[in-house]
Amino acid sequence: MSTEKKPLEKVCLICAKGSLEDVYASLVMANGAVMEGIETKLFFTFFGLDGITKKAMNHLHTATTGNPAMRMPGGLPFPTMLGGLPGVESAVSSMMRKQMEALDMPPVDEFLEMITAGGGEIFACKLAVDMFKLEKEDLSDEVSDIITIGEFYEMCDGDRTQIIFT
Amino acid sequence: MSVKTIAGVAVNVSEDGYLEDMTQWNEEIAKEIAKEIGIELTPKHFEVIKYLREKTEAKEALTIRKVGKSGIVDIKELYKLFPKGPLKFSSKIAGIPKPTSCI
Image 1 (cartoon, chains in turn red, yellow):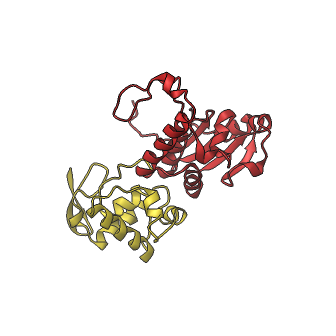
Image 2 (cartoon, helix red, strand yellow):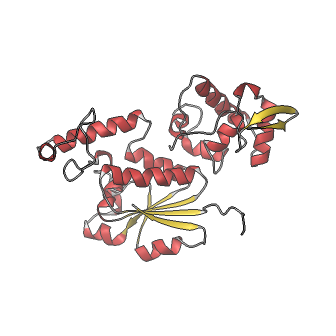
């Protein structure tokens, strides 16, 4: 058996969901790959587009209903009925963003800049952009292009490439 | 842990080649580790290295974001100075432990 190491050369990530944790999962993994010197492509589609839409990207929410892992500060379970009250999701999300900032996790716009600063590339899905009636100007300046999934797959060539869907 | 001779000095290094004791570090060691990685150190590199060592001594966690806000370099410049390893390679050259941050 060969013991030769075969490090990853390219990581292609697809972010299809727009909640705070889904978008950050993609951003952390993309930035982590760039920091490791791995070629990185990040593709946003469907509700994930919120992560690169100027108006939405710095105000992402985490779901306070239908999220069994949600806890109150202190660790008690978070009652689902409470999560549905007006303003609760907003407050919880803003609290979460503050906690993330304390760990030096940047806001989404800055995170996107960090990824492209290291040579990572960010794309928007054409089908989803059309569906949500968005224009290139609505998207972060860090987005290099609006492309089809076929074009994205073309970028994912190479035998040390992984596609990650979050 | 193993002992390795870098720039004529016997130093303790981790499995990945990071110095285990940052006080054993000197500029010649930095230059030699950098050469192994393929980086030629400039005064700008040393400014970053100095910053990393200061923060490590103060027991502050390091992220590329923090270095980018240090006023020494922005993140783009940091990648230019230490290609493919802005925090990993800079830490190795600075003689501090392997970074434990994800950002």
